Length: 390
Image (cartoon, rainbow, N blue to C red; front, side, top):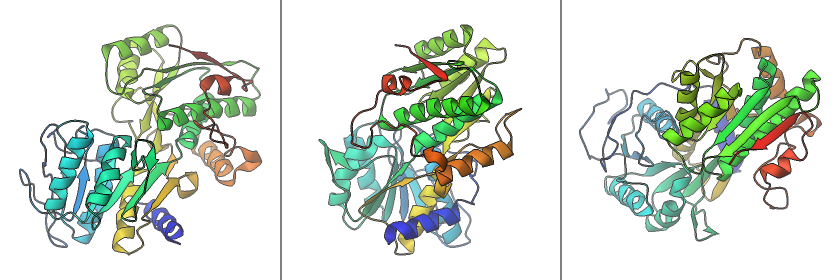
């Protein structure tokens, strides 16, 4: 029942638009407070640090205006707080370690936090411990589950939110081929489940579009790699640039997309890039579209469920295209051939799982829990030829 109510709430708040966030540059200061709203209708203030707040977000040591998980999870928390007169703040840990995350959580709890949002897979171990340490505090863990040494426990005061990345990746690959691109690239970071699912969906979407268009077998070329790390690197940028220079037209930068953006800009010509997780169209004019997770309304919905006494504690929820939780930002995409009608049509196919299209998109594991490799995916393709690049 909690799960159904949570999905209903999420579906209702999905109509709320993603707001732009100017953010703060306090990247390395622990227990930094950005904004609070003390009473309904009061104006926001900007204290330098500390202070009591009912709602708190812990960043993963990146900045609150990172154009990614931190920023758009923060937007969901901030929006709910300001609409409902709740105090709110964020904390930036000293580094990306479980101990630093726990220290930040402790600071939030000591300052009165009733609900804490933690965005990203790096928080799994910290929340595994924190949910027991602070049983009266509720936790919203985005893109991870509370896990320690392969032991996963989601306590009643924790909800775990995932997204169907393979569906968002599918839409990006489908749109790229429909737009007219035939030489594609998937530029992943670490081969963690979310990145892998984005990649497999991208490949399967390209395959499905090629089939619909009646292209010849092997007509789509796909370079595919995992760099082994998140973030920016001159080496990663050089690798992406080499792909563009060798003829790749469109690269999906999944984890550290700035490497791909910079390479595309430097290369010039007609090459394009695809962003990930959030709408990245404002970062670079080379961004064709973005394979999005609707982080802001998801976090907003979880907080709303908490205050409505319908918090889905003890559960792990994967949000899909059916809740409008993944997709492409068509209004800001730079398509010339792929239309809104085209997008609406493929979304309806996925929502209805027409001809088993949605259930057939590959993930990191199969129905029996066995690992699926990119070689496994490539072996089944007719229209896409995958070149795995080390």
